[in-house]
Structures are given as C-alpha cells and as structure tokens.
Image (cartoon, rainbow, N blue to C red; front, top):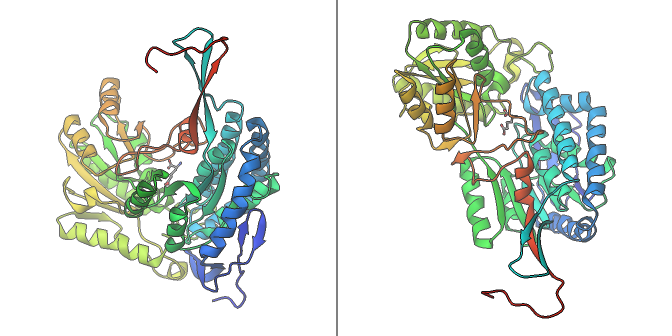
Amino acid sequence: MQATATMFKNNIGGTVTESTSKEFFEKYNPADKNELLGKFPKSNQKDLDSAVSEAKKAFEVWRYTPAPKRAEVLYRAAEVTKDQKEELAKILTKETGKPIVEARGEIQEVIDTYLFFAGEGRRIYGLTGQSELLNKSIITIRQPIGICGLITAWNFPSAVPSWKVAPALISGNVVILKPSKDAPISGYRLIENLYKAGLPKGCASVLFGTGEFGDLIVRHPEIKVISLTGSVEVGKQIYETCGRMLKKCALELGGKNAIIALEDANQDLLLEGVLWGAFGTAGQRCTSTSRLIIQKSSWSDSFIEKLASAAKKLIIGNSLNEKTQVGPVITSSHRDSIHGFTERAIKEGGKLICGGKFLSGGEYDKGNFYEPTIISNIKPNMELACKEVFGPVLAVIPVSDSTEAIKVANNVEYGLSLSIYTKDINLAMKAANQFESGIVYINAPTIGAECGGATAFGGWKNTGNGTREGGVMALDTYTQYKTIYIDYSDKLQRAQID
Ligand code: UN1
C-alpha cells in the first residue's frame, strides 16, 4: 500500500466539499493490487441533503434557461473532454483495467454523447394537436422533472454517466451522480469538467459511496428520477422503492448476449466478431457475447479449434500497454465468481476448450487476470447458457438449424443484444424480427452500440424496465409532458364531452 493516498472529496454543486462521514473506501488498480488510486468518503444522509438543497436552488434557474443555451454547456463540455482525452483514458484504464485503446474509445463516446444531446437542445420536440372546437389550439411540451439521482456501474465509468447526465441536463433537470465504488474517479472528473464548461453552480453534484448510499439517493423524497445501470438484483430493489414512491425510474441491467453462427456465415468475419465480442473488455460489458450458438456443420468443430487458438494468442496484461487486448477483471472476488461459473459448467458436462485458469507469474501475480475461456457442449438449460458471468467466458451451444438457434437465443431471462452471422438476408431479417432483445446485430458482434448517435440503447425482459439511453428516447426518462390549451374565441366554449 502506498504511503500517501489521494483523499478524494465530494463535489457538491461545483464546490469540492468534505464529507461529514468519517468512513472511507479504497480503490486499487485491478492490474496492480499494490497501486492505491485513492481513498473516498462513504457519503451519508447529511452530504446528500446538502447536494439536494444546492440542486433545488439551481433547478429554479436551469429549468427556465433556454435549451439552446443549456446546449452551449454540453458543446463546451465536449471540447473540454476532447482536450483531456488522453489523461481521462489513462485514469479510466487504471480504474477499470480496460485496455487503453478501448478507454480512448469510451472517452470519445462521452464526446459524441455531449454533441448529440447538445443538438437536441434545439429540438426537444413536443406535439401540436387538433382541437374539437373553433378558435382553440392545443400544444404538448416536454418539461424537466427536477433532481435526478444517477447511479452507475464501474465498467463504463465515463460513457454511462454521460448517457444519463447529458439528456437530464439538456432537458432542464439537475443531477446527483453516485459513481460506482469500483471506478469512482472517472465520474468525478465528468462532473468537474461540466463546471469547467460553464455549468451553473448547483446543477450537478458527484458524491462517493457504496450501495447503502445509493439506497439513500433512491429513497430521498426530493429526488424525482432515478436512473440505474447495475445488476438485476439491485434493479429490482430500486424499482420496488421507486414504485412505492411513484418515482420515475430507468433501469439498465444485465445481459446474456449471443451470436448465432449459421452454416453459410463468413467464417473470418465471425471469428473476429466472436473474439472481440466475448473477450473485449475481458467480457465485462453488459453487451458482451457470452454465448456462441453455432449450427452444426462441416466446419463448426474446426471453427471452435481456430477460435481457441486465436483466443490463446490474445495479449493479456497491464492495460496501459498499447498492445494489450485483454486486461484484468475488476476485483479478485469477481475473478473467483467467474471461475465458479467455469468449474460448475465443466461439472455439468461442458468441455473446456481453452482457458479456465487464473493467470499467474510476473505481472499477472499483481492483478486479477483470468484466461479467455471457451467451454463447448453447453446445453441451453445449463447454468452457463442462462446466467450472466460478466467475464471472459464463452459458452458454445451447438444447434441443428436456424429455427432452433433463434429459440435458444431467446431462452434466457435477459434481452439486451443478439446477433446473427449469415449471408441469407431473409434468415437475418427473420431473426431480427424474432429476437427478444432491445439490440440486434447482423454480421457484427453483440457489443459496440453507438449511444452518442441517434440510437436507443436498452433491453427487453429482465434487462430493464423498457426505458432507453442514447438517442431522443432517452429524453422520455428526464421529461414530463404538459398539454396547453389556448382558447382564442370570445365566449366560453364547451367540448362535446367535457
Ligand atoms: C455496458 O456494458 O453497460 O455496446 C454498456 C457496447 C457499449 C456500451 C456497453 N457501447 O458494448
């Protein structure tokens, strides 16, 4: 452990503020357990109350600031982020273990998200209706809701907060962010940079804490919207609380994503896609490919062998190294959990094709490294075919034809991202139509959604509650409608059924 660790403080409404709590948590680099990245307060109710009180004051001004003016902050935030891209990518890599090349991509996603929602500042369209009466108009506008509590995960500690912060702010809301305790610095910098971009005081706060603090945010009566990216288990608890309080709630939860490989697939493309989808970010994306549903064919067995030899060649190591393709997993207990899935899959009859071990020796001893793992002979009802692992473990499920493949792909509680590799356009479109998922890829892996663009990100079934991030649909979480009737006749008019 280092002698002097950076002590982080909360940023309440633009002011760096010491927590009233005397409890702290520590954050270490997952690639080097000796590197302490900082100490962070376990914030409490008092800290939250002061953030809420700043937010309430700021909301009264920000909500009436014209949206194109609000957009100017996001445009500038994109510039500030661009100027710091390399520094922010390095912080992100140290916090998460994500390879530096991927970290740069994530910072770019923040920039794209800001630019997209800044553009929305000139739209945020409502609707114009037709009145049943003479000389009467009806317009429906979107208005902000108030203070939004944003609770985010560690695996995309910059992009995911930006997906929430940008649509919330552009619509005139104010935000309180609790970044994950496993990657707290990136979220802190995100809020700090919004102030550098000219965000008025009070409009955003970032407070550190564990799950208990997240619960205080959810229960706070002045916080009117909750947006969570996290596990199904936490999502269910939060939804229940929000339900009782009639609070708006957006949930982005887990996934058990699959690539279907049909007999006519382009095998080279498929190989690259599966490798990237399954082992990119060490399998720790909610969109990661954790199942390969492969049609039995003359090449399916040899393809698995080729895939395994490519997986064995992936460069695993400290993610600050430009060449690293797979970094560590987030914590040692998470690595244990991943390994548990491997062991149980083998016990259930799965065949270990490659990987399945902790990496050790040299720099591997310092971090939580797990070998890219492929397990074949997996049947659709086995644990590895159904449960989210959130690590570099790919289940290979053989099937006979496309009908069975689609059925197996849908045979899980989640519905985030499904993909099909085929040259048959009819089959591809049939699958896209029948997939029970919020995102579909044709001839591309399950990861890589472009949330900075005009696209909706989110899932079906237990992946969420139907809300979306990215694209104009994200505004549905952060706005409420108001219908305004304008009667310009000179006498009282009554509708037919009033
Ligand atoms: C997540 O893992 O929570 O589509 C989000 C992707 C990324 C987002 C992943 N753009 O893989």
